Length: 368
Image (cartoon, rainbow, N blue to C red):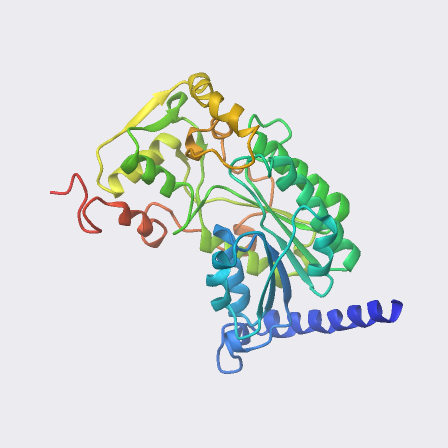
């Protein structure tokens, strides 16, 4: 047993050395230049990614595969939901395996041979089976504990801007509790807080576009005055790779947000103009919104499957809208990594929203 563990640690040490020399110091190798092979190269990174099938996860796995890393992906969904991830790395470099998230010991076997562990687990709303406490606190603590016991060099815990013990939203409170639990088990964990993330599969601009096109109205709770700094997904992934290069990022907390601050009302207007739809927003007092959601919430607590409803109509979402999702500059961010984040209201970051236009990409209800 001791010999086996010693051998594993020695192998991991060699891999970590390769990580620094191939994937970090020689950027040309990482980029697949004259001296490197990109996805066909060997970076030395063996990463276990929890939550890889989510929105941000696919981009993180793709970037790891791009530099020639081996990626281990435990998943809870169906096998079909992981198919796109197989293409992100060279043959045999993307290892997918179903696991039981309810069994804390199941985490151990997925981290024991990795030198990087990444936790991207999260939910927008609770279900009977997966509460915010279970996903944001218990699972995060289990991963951090397993990583610490296995001697993993780097642990990344992805959280969100707005995480606070005093937040009104339950998701934000449990996100903070999860950060505390992670640091208790793994003090050198790198915590990455993100403002609402924008990209092709996002649940911010796409949700607004969906409500605009498919529902009678877009709810603006208490006038839609909540402030936020949406950030482009590829900027977040770029920042992740930069932190992977430097030992000094261990134990640090980063906050990533876009360069512009919007109110929720301004974001709704932006989406409506982008998809060329007439304004359909409706100001709703938050107390009324919660009252309308109370029957669904009561039913959801007693049945083992999700009640069909849009996240923007749930009480948890309404609570979250009581917190401004902006950075205060107290933590490290893009500037400290030499990255200039992109605006989300122009160019590629908002391109995907245009496909919500009625009649096709070049048209829309208000097209003239």
